[in-house]
Image 1 (cartoon, rainbow, N blue to C red):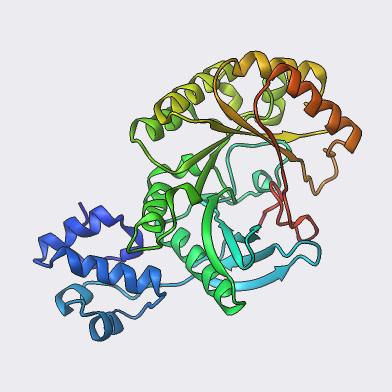
Image 2: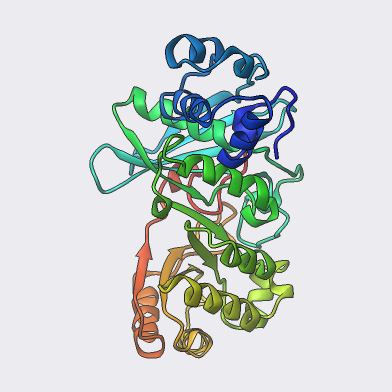
Length: 347
């Protein structure tokens, strides 16, 4: 339950706000009105909530002045329209957020960061090389989304989705990330459909099981790296402390509980994890678990890791067709020219 003291509504969940409102004698409809004013309409001034949306003063008086992230820089790819926003935080650190154009004209999704830096030490990821690290507060995640939406609005575009695939490992900041996702999903908040919100993880099994047990309706994407433990240990050393079969067992539990396919993401690296043996290991690992297998070509700013060429990638997909026999999707990772692609965000 939220404290009856002064609070920031962006740092709560819809449920905790409802509980808090009850402690100060305010009806639930006022919570719906304030979240609608803040998240649906983008109005930050509590006084305006009272004047325009009839939120009672005994409620608005308890909201502290809501800080905002400082939008320091925006750059748009000339190749594909991906747009990267650099936000400066109150402690001088920085995070990056990406507006992703969708197939439907005018629609965009927001790629959100959940941490400054990342402790997972993925060998091909620029975020992992950052020296400063901390979790983001729920309000810092929400404000990324709100400001990204304001940028989209100014361009005549609308935000229809959110993906927690930016800087950081979302499941290392589980409670705050899920609180943000619930605020975005709430019908009188961000009003983003649950299926339009994806949370990505490199494979934290206890948190995957928690996510499954809590019956969270958001999409889950699990980054595999490799189906061979030795290769995975080189690419994703922290997550690889858990054997890949234990990770796949958690993915299977999630698929069984949801009654659908679980999304497995696979960063393709030339000469490292795109061979016939890799495809065979994937098929043996996945077995009968229903999956959607997303192929993402590596984007390593250092040049140490290279994406497979068309011939190598085609041969790998053919091998997956034989050994996996399930949907394989080549996922586009845009904004490479502005370092907005997967694995290139570094503040």
